[in-house]
Image (cartoon, rainbow, N blue to C red; front, side, top):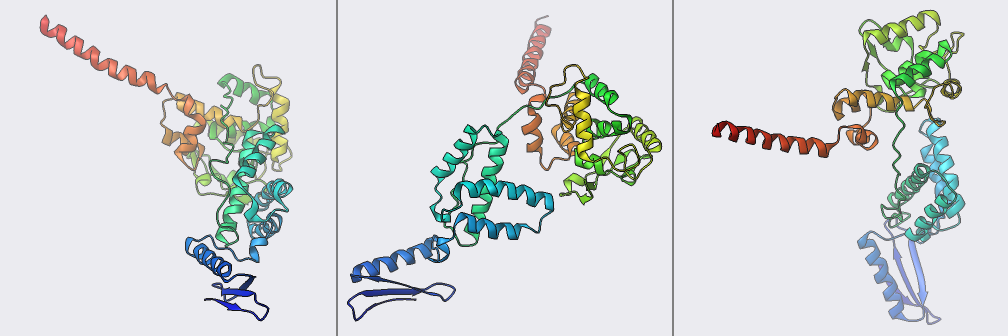
Length: 356
């Protein structure tokens, strides 16, 4: 619904009503300009780029406040991480209207973060958060399109994980306080993350059947995904080791602080930092999470395929497993070369047999 009318003062008044029934009007000295404005508005509606003139003035900071309010239903740790990301975004784009943020500005921002020597993975996380916030603004009708895309993305960055040797894993376990050694076993041979190892209850382990069923993470929250709750089979030897530790350090959890209470992640990580300096060859940055890399290497070296490794590490997809550990699988080029070479060898043997 749109119309143009001439006012007593000679101005042309163009007006229209949006889908919500709100009226919007502008005044022009010439009728042709009023008509052009209405035509442009109609075209924006048809192409899906129309913005309410009032909401179009919403700044990035204003929208981030609203966005965080809706995001607050998630778990506290997830919200805290989002708040840290949002602080970076507001610091850079806060006063700008949402529609004023350009792809070139996003690229400049990520370049500035790189110049500040932030970790590549963290810059990627910040860009992903900005894209998420902007995408929700598009969905809410505040923005015609998201300025973030693969073209503006800094890339996740690929860093090959350090893989400890079996000797180093056992040396690390021996260097840990006795009551925390089960944590090393859970990280290196079950693949639990540190928050999962801290919260693993004795009732989550079937010692007779040899199955670990992680369901909680520190301090006492359910695991986020169904994949994370995948039961992990363990050998009887490991089950016996864990059972002996449980009997000695009696508590509700498999890993305790030595007094029967659950061992917090920071307690375990601090012990790993202290123990790693006594293990020859372990890098200074080695941490508990790197024990999962050892498990992946162990499974791959035993000839297991990507789907099995994915299942044991409880990755959401096989692509995550391949992106992280693809370099550990036997060289595909050499395998293919050997396969084709075997055909030619068989052919040569066949010809020699005929000629003989």
